[in-house]
Image (cartoon, rainbow, N blue to C red):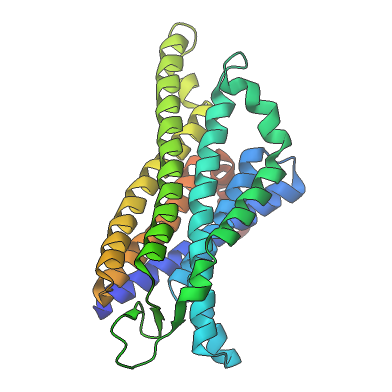
Length: 303
């Protein structure tokens, strides 16, 4: 178990470093150049992933609260609330990125193509709505999360060594679970629909381009590379989401959390931010060119 935790912390550390590099890159692009709307979306997604790894991996708030001598009850409420907010933001922004890319690659004469200018114009409003929705949606964690007390409270579900969930009425528990699941299923469904549309569009576009352009030219298409990146992110997100959903659903229904299962769940949730950032870096030509230039300058300065 200890070796698995060590692997988990190595993975979380790698995820934080890679996401911080990507975040600084997007900030540089946004401040120094004319950013694309996709850069603004990806920048927020990267920030959310950093927070997810830091909070989910107990790498930020635990040490901070201990140094400030803050009570365990407040620490548990803050940690659980922020993690659920970041998880909700992750699925919402990933869905927005998928929808935006589907709109971007669509012809101007198509139904989705008519939303190209509108989605760019109202991007800030969309961001504000997403943040407000998720900050409000996860407030139930503030009321039902407490610091664990070693008492004979059989209905209290211990989630971590120091935190637990208070017992809920079956109706309230079912209502919270139904609302959360409905939101996630809807967003995952939108991602799958837009991903299927993009795959169909790329296949159709590739057949048309074979008569006009060479295959090498098609491979260098920025739109195709961006679409491939988002398709990989969406597929991996859906897989990670269903693993997390099965674990959460089972624990919620049985009202019991096993420490090993909790560690596995944390590992899977932190795997998404870690792997997706590596996918984004490897598919973004701007980052690859920048890294090559840095390597060339370092080589020239040394020799």
